[in-house]
Length: 308
Image (cartoon, rainbow, N blue to C red; front, side, top):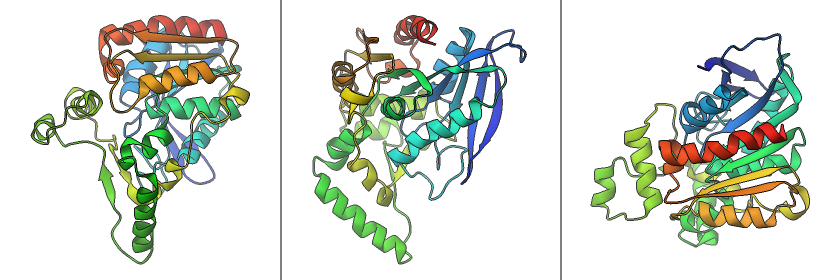
């Protein structure tokens, strides 16, 4: 079995909380390839990034570091629940800065994996952070595209104007507006008439299958403007040359991972790239359901072993 060590990563601004998953028979005198595991939007390091993919990859021989993004989970940073893509991508470099100081990590064999919005962040990080030698996206979402579309009611300008008004109000002393991403329960989702499989899957995962006190499942409204103008895939044709694997389910929902996965696979300049479409799987099946996760790992493990 793999084991987990909790670490605090010092930065210029605040500490980043992370769980370090190490392989069975771990020996600090040996060197290992390492993988950063980035959690979904609204999630935390203890959920799918850590207890599913982090654990499985560690058991396959990798040192895996699952971390809470800045302002989220147990990491520092204010204001809380800020979903700023530039800061999220910078966190990858901050975590790598820590990894390269560990004597048992091979600094030339560092990869990154992200789930949902973490997948989009991992892809963008791989474009600019050349210490990442291989990148994996599991049901990855381009959060900027989602903010311009479904999360804004397909009215990004109106949403930006509302964010501007709210930020002005908060600067003048108004209470922070922190919006939930999900209904509080499956019963509430049913009562609200929600039918989208992604929203229902998220509600089931976060409220029933894997609830955790550190999970955010909410965002500070006034600080989401940066996400509306951001694009995880911008310049992928030029800058995304890192070996890439994209895993998606073939049952698309409102968050758009299937669409985003096929788009980045087509656009990436990577000479080594793989597309894995898991039949019958939804977005949230790939978080923790044994069958779909097993199929994903059956491709992820050899991908990282071949490219790190």
